[in-house]
Image (cartoon, rainbow, N blue to C red; front, side, top):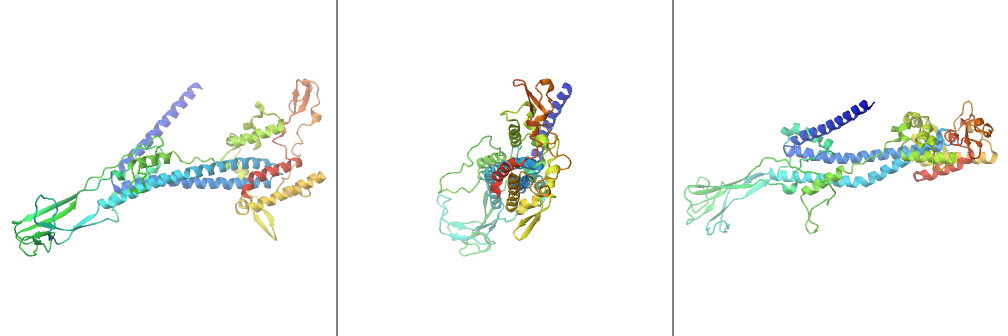
Length: 506
């Protein structure tokens, strides 16, 4: 056995190593693909989309938990007088606790994820605008103008010539050649939680391409002569009157942008909480471009706030739900009710009792309890009409009315039982009780008559407890708690508990 344990530990370490290696390999492949504007945009958008997915997924899961809690609350009330009543109440308590946790988790983390996603989206928009400016086309006017206004370039210039250039922004980037890398970059969300180097250029560090101005001189341009406009090209001529580019003495001009190779950015997420922005706080200065600090902090904040939501009750087994803190507390209270002890004994372990509550270990809760609520169609009176549906349907479409209906029906049975001491007429045929075959629950339980022995050897310890100090043989109380059907004296307490627990849904 020690060798097997040692082998298991080694395998676990290897799997962890391979997982990290796979993550690193995935990150490297994705990062290498970010070799241009198009792939960079896909990369940033994938990161922002991942955060948005966390938000939408958590909202959906929280809604499912809330729906399940309502369904189980209704089931607990509907089957209150049946054996399954206490099982559904236990499940409803767990479901309600989990729905509350999920709602708080989503409420607390959704704003943080939204803020982080906004920073990334803004960075992508900044870079898109800068790219449009960087890939603009420049056109020179097909004329030049001689002017008397000095340019201030030379110390003592006396002849001046100007030409205008117009820049046109590019509205759409041509990404056809980057299609393969775009697909790789779109997988950036898969490494959001593990990546160490994010290939995003900080917009504030973006370098626009330079402007290059060139001049061309033809013949001899004598500044002592008259300089005139050039009529068919950007420049001026020396002939006393406007002329074209074919003039013997002329100067022509042209302008263009320089271009630099794309250099991918490199931003590492901050390791501790810091200011979300390093922008100036002066309201008279409006931030335009996203900084590297903002991006780094947004990534850190985003991946440290991925919502962690509990499972649905329908995803559990009796084994797994037995360790739930709410279920353990529920079982503990049942033990205290049964034995009157403040602390359960080793044989009254809450986890073991919780398993017993649902019929033993490895019971699939979905199959054994949840699915039944989708096939238990019933009718409830609603004024002059009737509402038909199973428990799940009623919990979604007529929850308040269904809760009130079953609450009223259970109260009527309580009143009848309290006044007559007998079962209400037709009780065995209603939704709120289960028809029992054979012996009633508790018929096989120990009674006082079974535990009358005055000596330890004569006390049947399978049914009784022996008190050595008092030398008394008494009925085991703790063992009866799980299997006993709730009787009329406890019904009112049950109804009030169910109502107070789930009244917020009404």
